[in-house]
Image 1 (tube, rainbow over the protein chains, first blue to last red):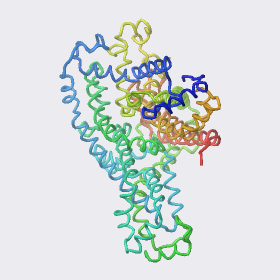
Image 2: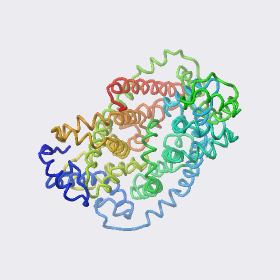
Image 3: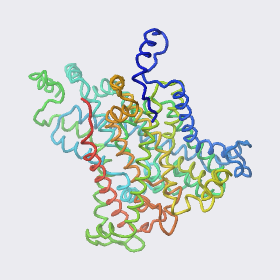
Image 4: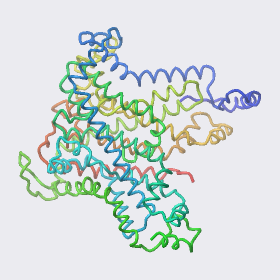
Length: 301
Length: 320
């Protein structure tokens, strides 16, 4: 943590400069200057280098042919795309990506729909047993995924859903977190809005579809992004219910690629890069929703 | 139905949201219909499995795991006190102690560092957030490549090798003394983006006046950090603390990809979750013991979250 002991002393001068040049970019009162500024940049650059280092070595290795990958791992002294193409074909990556996409899209759509429905019921309907139902919903938030998978595996097995998309997706079609999030935002809608719609003869489902949902679209976007990421990043569950290569998701497929090619790191790294790209793109496109989704979504981890 | 709803509000126009009314059955069928999809999924895949796991946890199964008999709820006590579970518990606690404080400190430090008005700040923020885009598998494989003793990147960099010979022989992931720390590093790295984003969002919600007022009163940077930033970040920090702790206790993918619970025979990286689900776990084929350990994990996590909420949550200022 850089310190600025002389801030108070510097302050009058800065306030002055500020008043003299209002058109220029306003300087923050504790903006570092001089060597402090240089030191801060140096620190930021150094830490950035450390944070990016694993990514850098991965990318360098992915573009190197097999005989060069062990020499000078930090220097990109050879370049080939062959590793990518062999990772793509031998790793069955296209199939993995497709499987992950199918499951994630189904899970995301279903989670948004089920959350909107149950969130609406808890926020705007009144019915006997509402508090008990809500308490039960919230209670499921406390149960870690890992505590349920032993039994869920048996359930999926007895349904004959091992090695299927249903097996991957169905346990995650609804979340209490989504319900809770949507309920919170629906409760901020003015009651008058619903009353006015009721006077016009609009039922609850019509109100939900034409008024409530369009008004809370940003929240639903954040929920959708969060659901998509959680589904895409699932690691343990696909490893449990999938043992047929054509049904692997990206995560369980990467595991297979790594475990069966331990002596070919460039191949595994190429597969890793391919697997990482879709989420990187999604996050760049939807970065606005990300902060919102994470802030709300981290409730469930 | 709808007309009644309007009339029931009319007498209390000031009481706009969720007026207290006696439960009415008119909306009951609609409510049940809307709740049904979620309720079925949550019931079948969360509540039922939990209850069933509690029941299974007191069963003992034969070596093939197909014939089980009741062993009494004492089995939970026996399981908890067994050498294997105690080892997993200690490994998990160590892992949490290695990852959570460091992850929190790094996240807060970087967020504060990148919160000043500087040119090019967006680039640094993007870099520090970037690890949020890596899944467990992607992050772990990157670190596996870094750390592998023969084919890995660090082992083949000469000056690094001279500095740390153990990275090549026996390898940080292969040495029982360093394996858990090495896995923890990869985990801290993978979680850094998440922590950074949350803390940055928290920092931006602190009114600048507070810092200016403190500076006018003569508070330096360090003083402002502890007296303004940290208290105002309270809810965010508690939140991140609980999530990071929960994640540490649920760690599975990193272990599965980096060490397989080893190095053997110490099982130096067998966390509780790996103990339940891992391929090399001693209870791999015993559904009773697996379910029992999973239930114990649930109880431990519940106790930890409650402890953190009560111990720290009480001292947090939530604003107005």
